Length: 159
Image (tube, rainbow, N blue to C red):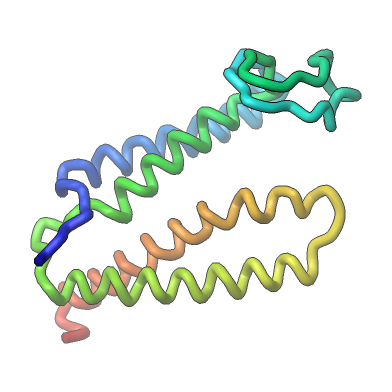
């Protein structure tokens, strides 16, 4: 039984557009609107950053102001990277499937090594960003490795 969990090839372009828009929005937000507050739905807020915010500690479903647009930007970036990485190529044969599988395994190993290295060398509150960024690093490594392998294959370098 052959299963295919990949998106149609057209979604790859949608993914590129979403990823580029998300990166551009991140740059714009960081440069011109670093303290922009946006009301977002939340399931839990432990009050850890009450000294930075006027939001009281709350539980359950509620709406609260966040300090930036990063929630939306990272969500759009995640969707874009997933669409780029997991959309079919124009020619999706067994060898392309093999390259995709090799790239996924390689990205998993490299991401795990980078995560361990970061865990052993980064301390303090900045470490809270490390687990958050692991998924983006994994997707980026996978996409870069797969696209390079596909480019080499198309130029006649592998088979």
